[in-house]
Length: 247
Image 1 (spheres, rainbow, N blue to C red):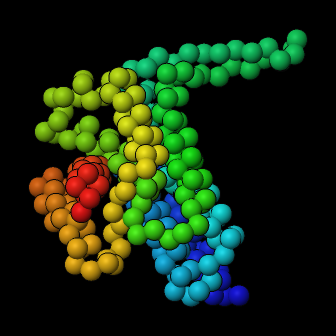
Image 2 (cartoon, rainbow, N blue to C red; image 1 turned 90 degrees about the vertical axis):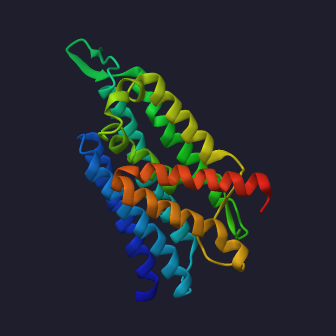
C-alpha cells in the first residue's frame, strides 16, 4: 500500500505547485510562478519514474497525473497569458447583471485577454490525446504540455531582459501575445515527432539530446535563467530538423 502511495505523493506535489503557480501568475509574481511550474515539472517526472520503478502503475495514477498536469501546464500558463494581455494595455470592461429586482452583480473582464486561456484549452486537448495513446513511443507527438508551460511562463523574463527592453513595445502588445497563444496551441497539437530526452536507442539517439544540452548550457551561461523560454525554442528547432531530415 505504501509503495502505491509514492507516485501519488509526487503527483500531488505537482498539483500543489500548479495551484501555487496559478496564484503567483494571477498576482503578477511571475518569477515565483515560473519557479513553481519548474518544480511541478520536476515532480511530474518523478511520479512516472517511481511508478515504473516500483511497478505500481495504475489507471488512477494516469488520470491523477493528467489532472495535475492540466493545472500546472494548462491553467497556470493560461492565467499568466491573461495577465500579460492586461499589462499590454488590453481594455477591461465592467459588466453588471440584474439577477433579481433587488440583487445585481458586477464583474470586470478583459474580453480580448481571454485568448490567453487558449493555451489552457490547447493543453487540455494535448493531455486528453496523450491519454489515448496505448503504446509506448520513443518520442513525443507535438510539444509536451510541460515544455510548453515552461516556454510560456518564461516570457516575462524575456520581455524584461535589459537587452530586449527597447523592443518591449513590439513584444508586449496584444498582437504579439495572440501570436504566442496560437503558436503554443499549434505546437502542442501537431503530429510532428519531438525527440525524447530519455537516452535509449544507441549513439544515434544521443545526438540531438546532446546538442540540446550543449546549446542550453551556452544560453544559460550567456543570458542566465531569462533564456529558459529560448531553450524550449531550441528544443523545438532541433526536433524540427530531426523530423524533416528523418535522422
